[in-house]
Image (cartoon, rainbow, N blue to C red; front, side, top):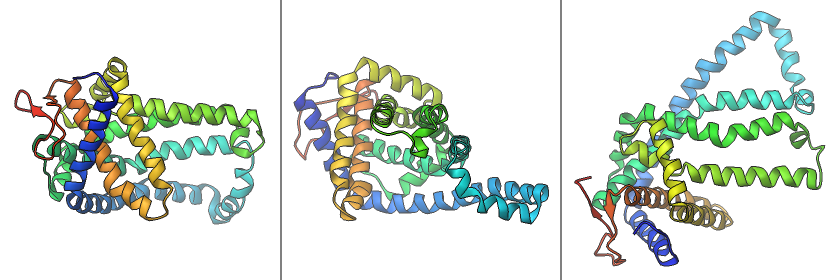
Length: 287
């Protein structure tokens, strides 16, 4: 059944958390591993980007000019020029944070293995990280640009939103618009990574995610918003809540979205059972 209801949604969430709990050790080991690799890659990319910039500035304005530049940074931050600086930083962030986007996408590879066989290994995430690196990076860039760049454009249009000159409704309305945009746009692309793991290119996966989220809005957004709500509620608990989100809720979300993607694309069918002996789906077409 592709349509959503309270029982279907409850079943989706419970199955996702049950499978995440069963494979929590594999997720923890795998996530630690890819995070270490991602940090190393991010450092290499940062060096490749920022070292030439720094040496170019030194060559262009000299060391004294560099010192003046950084000492005046706080003053620049408090002026409307902050908007342009944020735009530049966001552009650089796309490349610097790329490895982490790939790491997040690789979790959906582990989730796919769990949905298909009820099990995965820590080594599995490295296989997906390596095999789908460029596709997942492309998907991460699409997600980042779609979700974040409209916010940058809003800041460029309304610099007072960052500098603190907007108060009351002038601040509240853009803030509400930003929150709604993030939730809705990210929800529309919530099946992006499952599509890439399924073998689609980043653009094709984005198009399919948009189509499925429109066609089965209640099923996709019901699952997406449920996990967002769980993350917000769990994050209230200091430290422990963060660990629960990182090692249980996020893996469960990857499993849940992957399972919904496979159901909506007719790769699996639900049996309606929620027993631990039954995986609540069966593969179709040898997925």
